[in-house]
Image 1 (tube, rainbow, N blue to C red):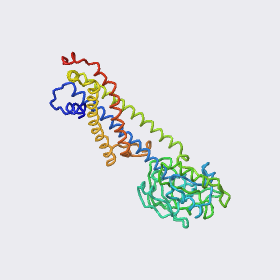
Image 2: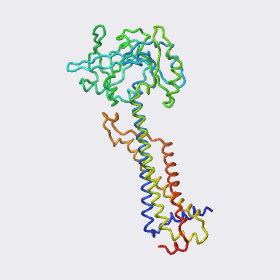
Image 3: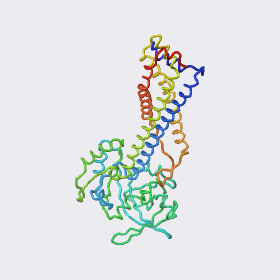
Image 4: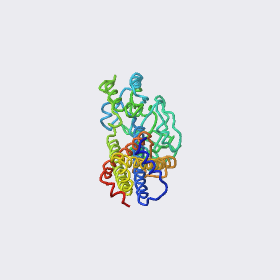
Length: 414
């Protein structure tokens, strides 16, 4: 039989409420660890949810990897590159790539009777994955875009709709300045909202055929291709693979292929998102320190309160190591109970936020209207294990206080 575990179980299971000192100490220690764990779980889940939500919105506008003309990826101008069937097949056949779609861009001006707005038209073909736009759609329906027919229909953001006072079904003129001014009349087919001001202010979706004609390009040319990969964690590896396959090759028009991944296209945004990891580590360290301090305080109080019992055990021949293990087991029981309470509080609040979105944010500042959360069982398990181990390890030192207790004096201690 494990004697320390047996004694610790007996002490922890004592419900006679005779100890006036240890009960508050146990409650304080349990509360400290439970609150610390709940804060760690919530902080981690919120940061991960926020990062993934913002990241997915950026990827929705620019995909994971873009293959385009070298100058297109280096400047704000859009230069044509050949995107025929053979190149599309080469890109689609790359390991890790799940989807490839062409796109073409053209700057223009949307004008109503009262106002005008400079925008970027993004032309998409029939292979356009509408999932992202559909998830952020607030009104209307997504038209079928092709590379052969001009639909004269566009998808605009709510920001544009509010500025120009447009609704679904309204007609709006667009002006394109080149060697001369050309005019097109479009119908607003749908309105989206992502709360990413950088994109909502300028991006208008239309069909690829319209943008190619406005740019005066050949039918097999485009601004480039957008590649979606199966796993974001493989972004660097797939990016290097694409670069090795197509970068610095020349199309039959003389343009040079190049590629960039989403991190390279928007380094400032992803740099900001990476900084959030530092905030999580600071919170984790602070909460673990708080938990450790409350557990150490609680253990010392319990040892002092159980001085007479320690003297009796020593008088009966128990070694210091055995008694230390007894109190460490006792601390483990307190920690496990605290972990259970902390998990219930933390995960419960996360589920409540997922279902109701009761904590809201300013979308102009945070890019989301409600606090996004992502419950990751593996990370939660690791936090629980780390909290348990650290809470026990930091108690090893204070437990040596038991070695200073003498049986002859301790049995008279009250």
